Image 1: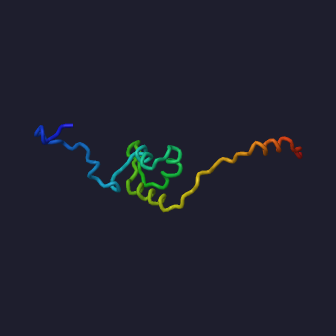
Image 2 (image 1 turned 30 degrees about the horizontal axis):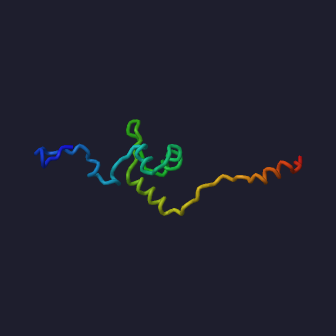
Image 3 (image 1 turned 135 degrees about the vertical axis):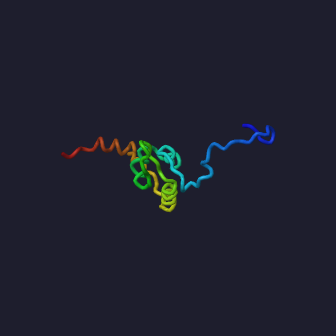
Length: 103
């Protein structure tokens, strides 16, 4: 990257995304999924109905304000433990195999 103090050249700012507040920006579905750390299925089935969005041509645009609201909602909700699969012990499986089945 050129150093203006050495070269005497002025650097051009090409990206204005830093000057726009997050709440006023628009994000694509992929960017929103990265922000929320969700997969496609969870995003489209659970998160998208809670967000403010519109179609710009064929691109989905999501407002930053609605993303912030969803994050705030998630933080205020109580933590839900992940479901764990039920596993039967080896002795329980053997006992079930030996027991006569009622038909």
